[in-house]
Image 1 (tube, helix red, strand yellow):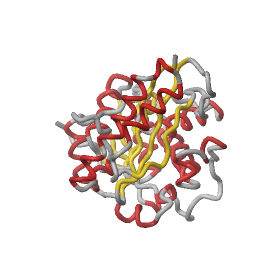
Image 2: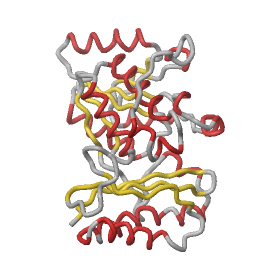
Image 3: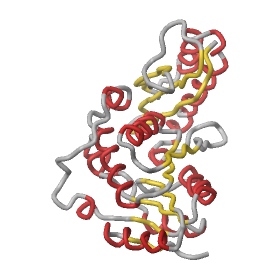
Length: 284
């Protein structure tokens, strides 16, 4: 087991990867906020199949947090994260400071996420996706990977990153990594650690609702939504924010009578913790 090289400057990261490319090696990037779990580690396992050199960025990006308290309590576990990545043979960890990424404060130049960026998560967290796309664009420009991995669990983010890459002709391939779940179906998330025992038990209903929607999807959108809503009923600790079925190519809600592939998305608040999840389905 070799310890990853931890780089904390833009210049250092670029110089290290210039040497790798000069030797003919390809590069994969996995952007993270740290507090790594098995869901993140699935990315680095897949990245080993996609490229010669693996880079994991660990940066708690302050501009994407719309509530200061969320930023303050987000776990910072760099030593533990590096140890986990070492066990998987990751080559580099890019762990810049806020000052390194934003030397003059938040950038005046921003990537805008458009209308979809103001919906769902964007409606509850105004400006969130503009900040996410801006920092992702910075990371892609710094690392210049051949491939970058993003999780299917954050389906709206994945859609917006893919669209940004296409719209701006960025020379990188986006690889989606399937959601990793606990045995009871709960999607892994760094935020799960904030759930109390009762909230953790209640959180199972989110994946159960998505499974119910998928099981009823042959009956169309109304049947799928009704099944999901039925699964959510009675769980008083879950405050539903949204439950929608969207088209995978536009991420806007599908019309009544639509038949074809779709994605059911859900978000809810459990105490002070916000959880999101999604599942692909086919509407009959």
